[in-house]
Length: 204
Length: 232
Image (cartoon, rainbow over all chains, first blue to last red; front, top):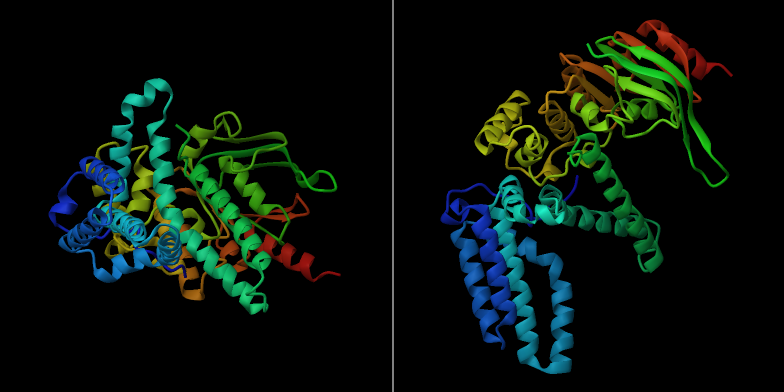
């Protein structure tokens, strides 16, 4: 059985964050992300992180779910933070780490409070005016949702590939870990394409 | 029932040493309620099924569903033909149970409220309503296959093609999914290694080496297949 990661999993509820329509909520997420990324210094992202955590609790997203959403990014964030500390000092390291963690918490809260169906509708509506320049909003929305759902699938493939390499005593071999993983990710993409094709999605 | 017609169909695939013939000169017309393909691994039976909704295109010949050419009228054919894969997880592309069924309905039902009502009704029909908000990856194999079937039936197709739908399931789940499939009002085209299941169909075609080796009553077809496997 596949492990499931909370990013991308909707948790039904009746909080105000569940009731805000998907479009304005997505706009709010984009706006928040821009503000957090552009404000200089270590303190704005730290404040944003605290606010993001507060909102996630207000939206009744369990802390365990937030933690699970963050866990896969922790190694990257730690390496990035350590490198920045070494190269540019602690304020930049704190700024980058806090920004990344805050954005993951915001994204987790957004996906936990917004059904995918509503998200797709919001994207299709938002991109509607761009039809005249050749944009296909339905396809963009589908690509967006597939990107979110692919995250747990890719983590699972990585986990299974590591287990297979370990079973053959090759856990230290980059080739035994990376090559099968790359092939299986491509195969997963192919299977997903076949499934969408079989369901007639993208035919219109 | 719909009419599925294969007319002198050949399918080839590119391989390192040159083209490989997967199916050669297949002609058959399927009008029965439950049609089953059996045969060994690599015999071409899954390809035969995949031709019905255009997942595979013929290299020569034509496949039609109710007169619609699968190669020329792919979208129209796919509106009539639903497809179930062996590996249900490959078919489920949305995060949760309800969202996956809703995806199937997006093309047909534009009203959000109506879509949600239909999702609830379909999940209730399959006994999955209590799992509506559950991750599709957290379901058992049997539940995933039932959800895949629910997603297919949501679009009310005239034909359901199921490619080894019970192969990865335990006995209990295999029975549940089999009973569901055989109980459908729609025409069913089934690919299976389960010979008991094959015998519950109306017509069975045995596929061997890319050709139809036997076509007839289930009992006779299964006997033919057993004999071909055990003969030296």
